[in-house]
Image (cartoon, rainbow, N blue to C red; front, side, top):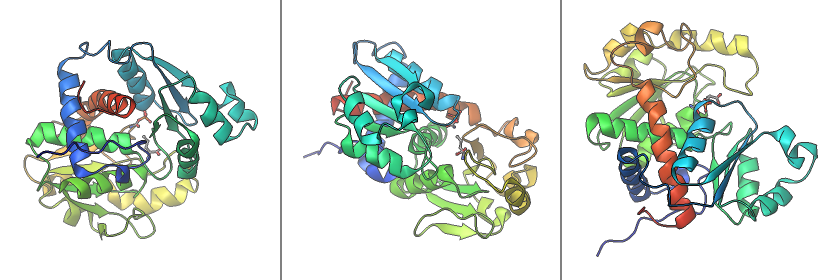
Length: 300
Ligand code: CP
Ligand code: NVA
């Protein structure tokens, strides 16, 4: 007897998902990617609030586009447009928004903020990036890897650079689906994650990898920029690092990128780069996520 993969009430971090739930979500995302205009009646008349306290190109626009494809009204809001910016509590905001919207998508600083919203909201809360986690990015990255290699189990992914929100969600997702993940980070910049495999040498991490992944050295909200750049300089992904990976390895980056810092232009603009496919896959994975969390079903 097959059991239905659990659907979490909220997606605050990758740990809210089980392996079977990730697989169901990726399956649904593939169906939605193949039929971009096939689901416009699915949530017709519903609203999704997208509240962003930090800049965003991909997440903000892909959620708005995903909502449109489901027939939802996406309401994009910044702090200065809500009473939250004037001191209304997170809890009162969540109670209010839950009465208008079917889902709340939030990009903020502290993970505690999304936890407090979710604790009070009666509709799903989706983390669109906090200082600690970026689960939506990791889901799109898994879809990208599955499309490229036809499987996830047994792949090896090397994350090189700052052990930030993106690294943490990627490593958590990898562990759940049977990807061997290794991170190369300087001392003091390791991802906050129990049991992660951390090395110091980027070439050692890249050896035998199916994917080499990096992200910016200075994330939104980070301070001490000079110290970060100095510590992370030996962790640039260049042609030599990528050449240490498998011949068919892909280069991955969540974007936005800084050519000449964490990655060379030659690598990110080269033939092994799948960064635009990663960006593209944000839309169908978020569309699948919205549909599943709002309807509590994995089928369209
Ligand atoms: N990768 C990502 O989340 O990009 P944005 O900051 O542009 O949303
Ligand atoms: N680590 C980056 C990711 C941006 C999508 C940041 O938090 O700024």
